[in-house]
Image (cartoon, rainbow, N blue to C red):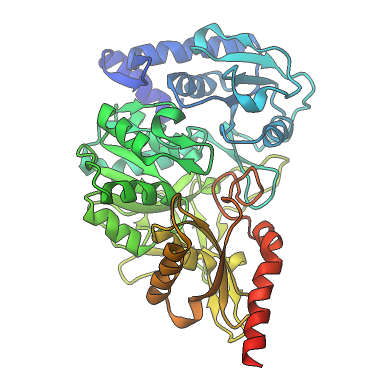
Length: 496
């Protein structure tokens, strides 16, 4: 039995009235959550479901299905609500899912080739259907969960994870923040995101904490790229959680609202931020508005979190020290490698070595804090021979309130160019001032010498973002290549 299930049954037996999970419409004690999960597990077993896909908004039902799959030995395939119809169809076929559990009204399911969804009585509003056409997929032994991450291509890649590895990461996280005595966590990110699944569900369950699961509408998270920080503040005021997890863009929006005079959420003890580079300036602004922000680092292939700043060991600009479960090394090229509870493999049987090459560049300081500089494959070399990690420059640009998103290029060029997305309401002169402010913080070789405003925000729907929020650089470059090349051509004309 997994340690997550052991903790659930322990608190259900010894503290049955303790609240396990709540939403705006439902509240379940540990005893009730255990009973619901067991009832769903019985139904999964009776229907002989080996691989179940789950497409649903955050809520108690999502967590109950996750735990039920563990009880029944069913492989679970969480599908992010912001996945497109094509991505969902790919994940269903690729994983060999023989059943789909879903919110019946989920828009992306409307025109999929699935049979009618029938109510699953124990699953609190979710329905299910049998997927008859999918042949079984080749999965590594011990696979409990398949987490789909899109990377830089349109088709998501299925990462196969074992429950013992996920439990180890959850326990490591629990011990890292144990001194904060967190009793209530609010899930902001989709539960289908492995980071929220492990750090926002499994870790709180291990300590008997309460998990709050508002809908995406309540938290203000609309898809993968739109966010209403005022809605999140309302959620924080209503539920008074002690911890939340954010990605950098959500943190930037929340900080901006607080800087404009909104009241600081006083209940928070921990705002964990990860999923992308966070500029030192943004961390400083978060400190000044009173947010207890702790930056971390992780990957789906490593079971989520690898390193985290904590109250006992925090260094701005770093992603913290590696957690006890992770063995982190840097090779001669500066690439980060992680050993420990790494991925079992990928759907289709692709093997993953015990020491996983992350593709990220980084370094350790003398005190063991890890710094991440960006993706090795994204680094470009200017015509002056200087290496530039675009994520670094983009983080500095997006730290400015007038810029919501940015993509930086400069391979074999004398200076860098950027495509920027204006923040709502920002004028062009404010964007110009923002670029100039970011340039003042950067060394000369990393500065942006020319920029243009994007025709529309970067989103997964228009192909400019991956579903986990990272730039699709090739797609952005191809769309704006003519304008960017013209900047260099004009510069040559002026100097001729």
